Image (cartoon, rainbow, N blue to C red; front, top):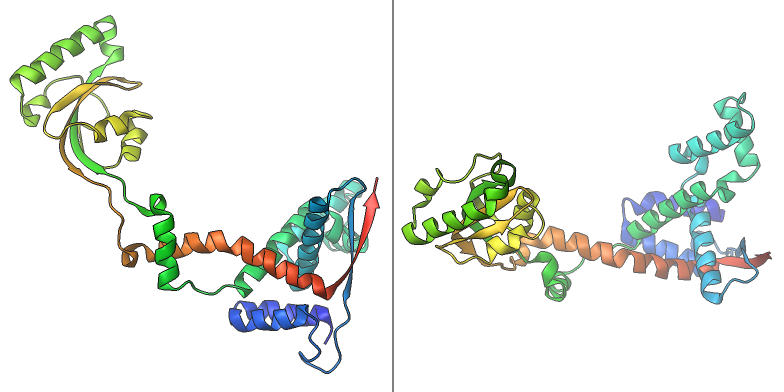
Length: 305
């Protein structure tokens, strides 16, 4: 079986049995003599064009990119991918807008645009990356997930949340009297300590909610503006605090209860942790696979001015 046909078969299998597919891909890419027959597969020629002044690191990246493009073209036929087909047809119609879609695609393929167009190359790299990521995937163990949580607590910890009420003094409505009115209201809240039900009748009408239950600083910021939420979360429970400025005016807040931040057990956040761990791991796995794939290629560098 030719390399092209074998790689396509492995790519199809990768969606069904990732671990088995990875083993087969590994055998293929290190030039194993017995995969489906007795004859060793010859290295696949690959020309990589780089600037004459390219540094070793840039050359290394160019080789990896070219391998991904080639692998993507072998596992996902360009003429069968809607995004690539649309791009190639568009390219040819810039040259000759009388061509039918079929004729434009055929001409683009004859000119090798499926390997040279930067947008198509990027698409093939992405397809190859996705295939290799699936083929090399193995679920993380519970211990690996817990270790990841311990190392990235800030990602998974639930922030403190509060239940509070607020009184609003409108900048638009009070104008130059805003500061004076806030002093008067602060004194009233301090001396009379009105219950929240009575305080609801103070202040100015607004579309802003007067009461919010179990919200984080981030959620509060989304309603009142950046920085407002942290001041609310830090306020003393059971006392009126203010004035706190927002873009709308001044506010006095009364925090009724606070729940401290906590790290949920793994059983509650396991799916989220697994998703983020896989996101962190997959690029490294793909890079490792591409390095192994180099052994299946006969790479020739061509320098361009």
